[in-house]
Length: 293
Image (cartoon, one colour):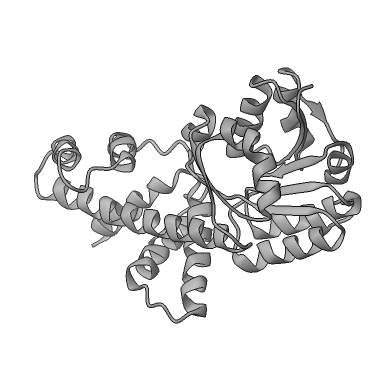
């Protein structure tokens, strides 16, 4: 018998992840706020649930991959939401990137109805999602984690169980905070090299051979130089994660001046209308500052 799973949210990440589950033989019932986004998945064998509640009613396990805390909460708590059909034995796995408070609220609601909850945000964007190479940062109910491993093995290259609910959210925000700060330093370096009369491609080659070589520079550098910001990870979501990471630091008095400056750059990029482009478009804010000075 093929395992049956529900999937809520078919954005850049969710669509790729649900597609992989279908291709690996899982029976998948999908839902998206804009239902027409389900059509492509129906063509490769998905069923459609008219509401989140309908998906949860049909499936023992439901995965959610939503854009932000407000979307994650509304799918659970709104009319025809997940909570309406959570009963004893149902498992809900939220893979959205949210803050600890959001994850905790959802966890309490699900478990109070006899359901089982796991938060499982992922490290990785569009290409790793398509290739089943995400890194899964799970926390919550250990038994549900064990049951979800067949899904995680399809979606990711490695999954971690981090303990109590909230730890997955915290780890994910730390990772994305570092990533956003690095992208800003990288952008400044590219502009500094260019304005200093150096070849940007040579800079990329030099970086790739040194101690700070990393897949992000290797992947994003060439596209940034070409002003190509086709979204793998939208800038508006990166800024949301910087904001949530700074709030996490705020709550425990951790000073993060570098992350705070990076957040301001992402906010500037949003104000320039770059929110739906890839987060590497923050490069434009550095170039813009140079042009206007």
